[in-house]
Structure formats: C-alpha cells, structure tokens
Length: 251
Image 1: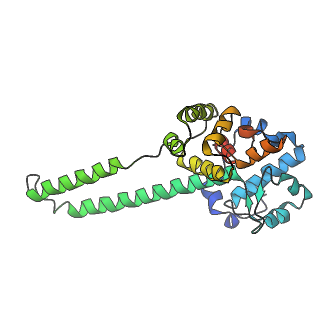
Image 2 (image 1 turned 90 degrees about the horizontal axis):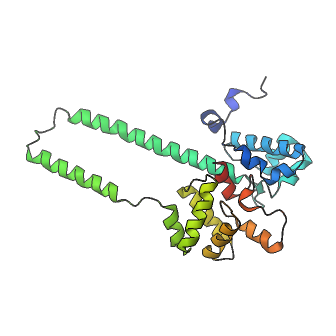
Image 3 (image 1 turned 60 degrees about the vertical axis):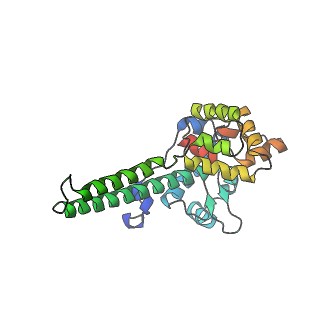
C-alpha cells in the first residue's frame, strides 16, 4: 500500500507521472561508477523531485531520505543553491519546462478554437453574400492576417549558433554530433546552452569547437573548468544526469 494519498499528489504527478529515461545514457554516465546504494538513492531523489514539480530544497531531501549519502550526489549529480538551498536536477528541469510550455500553448490554442467557433456561429446568419463588397473586404483582411502569420520567423538552432559568431563549419560538425546522440535542436535546448556559454571564459566559437572535439552533445561551463583542472570526472556529453546537454540526451 502506498504511504501517500491521492490528495497529496502534485499536479505534475497526475498529468505527467513519468519522466524520460534512456538506459544507454544511464549506463554510460558517471552515476554507474558509484555503488548501487548511491545509484538507488539518486533515482529515488529524481522521482521525488519530479513528483514535487521540480521544487525541492536540500532540507526536504534530507528529511525524506535520512541518509548522509546525499552529500555524495552534490554537485556532480544534483546542484544546490547556496542561498536558497533549492535543489536543481537539470535534465528533469528541462523536461518540466517543455511539458508546461507545450501544455500552455495547447490550452491557448484550444481556447482560441472555442472562441472562433462561437464567433462563426454568431455570424452565420449575418454573413453577407460572397459578392457583397463587405464580404470581399473581410476576405482580403483575413488573407493579409494569414500572410503576416506566415512571415513570422521560425526558430533555427543553426542560425542561433551562427548569430553567436560560431563558425559555420563548427556549427555543422556540432549538429552532426547532436544528431548522433538523438538530441532535439529546440529553442529550449539552445537557451540552456547559451546560458552555459555566458558562464564560460571562452568565446562561443572556442567553446563549441571544444564540444565538437570532445563529442559533447551539449555544453556546460563546468566541463571547461574540469578540462582546465585536469579533472578525471569530466566526461562531456556522456555524463548521465546533471548538465544541460544531458537533459537533452535523456530527451
């Protein structure tokens, strides 16, 4: 029997009671270098974090799991803000934001659809004949509005990287790396990468070039620090759970 009631479940757990998990990324990541006890703790932390809509403090984790092993997960497998003590698990955060953003767009589209149907029903008996001047004018106005919608620029992962002054040949090579890792070139993924690039002391072109050379599917400023420090923990795009790129590796 579960030790919690349905009333206590979060909104996310009811609407999306699971998160994406690729076994290949797990098995190739640093987490599998740890003992089974720590591996089990981490996946339980992930489940609890997702269940709480990705809003958890370190104190809540400590009270929930009551083990000193939590400290072994920081900062490689989860991050903790020093001021707020809020815990962050990057790959779950990205899935959460993608889900909520998609849900919001569907809700808006559904609302517009209902309003449009009501408007058409209301105008059904008021619509002038097709040869009426007002009908022709309305058709032209609607056609102009549709053309404006079509002219709106669509997001391009490649163009966004080029706008950061990354050389085109480097961009092309990195897109091949990301394709091989089955990563989605979405605006959400780009925004996360751009945030990490701003934290790095290298230019975007230099940073992405290193990502290509290391076959990283994404980018995290910590990886560059690890390279500079000669850290043995730096595994780039193959890391399982803690970075921006890994979030997309799971996606």
